Length: 180
Image (cartoon, rainbow, N blue to C red):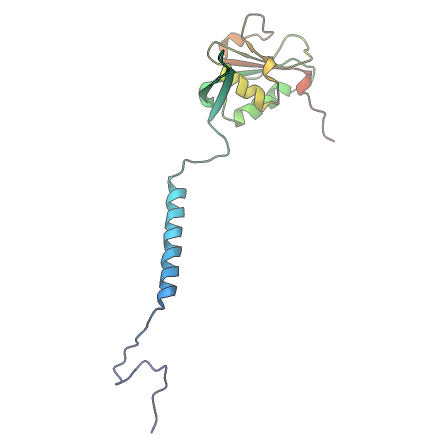
């Protein structure tokens, strides 16, 4: 007189079907995990590609109004559309090339590095009409103060400067000591 073990597939009556019940709490947890995973995957799949480099810069300028209020202007600059020329105004070799590479990695449209005429103690960033937001963003990324951002004129000590939207003249203040 052998009895079927309690976990036998042939339940009562020996039909051979296994009856399974899912705990309602477990079902709710599995469903919640599925929904959260689906939301995360949709958000990841629909976000713009990130390469570590922002292709746009947002520059915000706030000015005090005559009635004590302030005015804020926001300008978006597409880095890839701004032609930038870096010129070395120091006796340190390869300095313009190093800054050209660094700015190019940030998404700016770089021209071939050049030399400025003479050695200058401080750096300057010059801009063509309409390119001040880009020049300011470049100066900020280099750690330069806003006072060094100036309009591009024929007095800029760089040959071919007129062919660029922004000209960065690297002075002795941007020379870093060689690590050793």
